[in-house]
Length: 113
Image 1 (cartoon, helix red, strand yellow):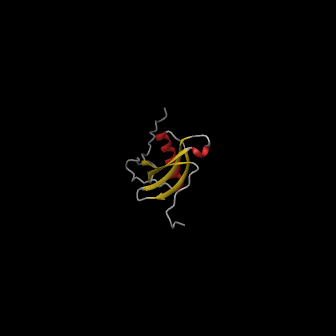
Image 2: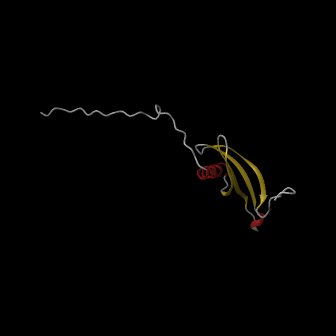
Image 3: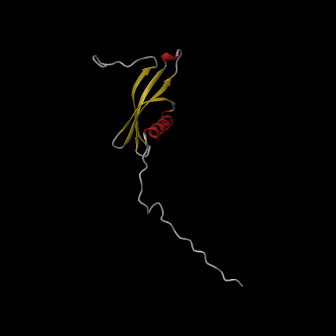
């Protein structure tokens, strides 16, 4: 009869015992995550991203959203939402900061270039 051989497996460290490395998200990924998460929360698709800037905690993304479609299209109502995401791309908070007609231009203060 052949002798039984014991097979031993080596245990590797689990994720819990390893130091956590924080995932860093770049501006493109932060904007994509912010658009996806915002659309899921408010129910309107993103029209585009008008600003992305780094913050101490991650990223702030300004997203333009079509809230009310009208005919003609230049009278449709859009809104800009300010979305904060952490360094890993997870949504922290959002708020609507502006609402405007599609054809409207920004009003610049006197003396602005």
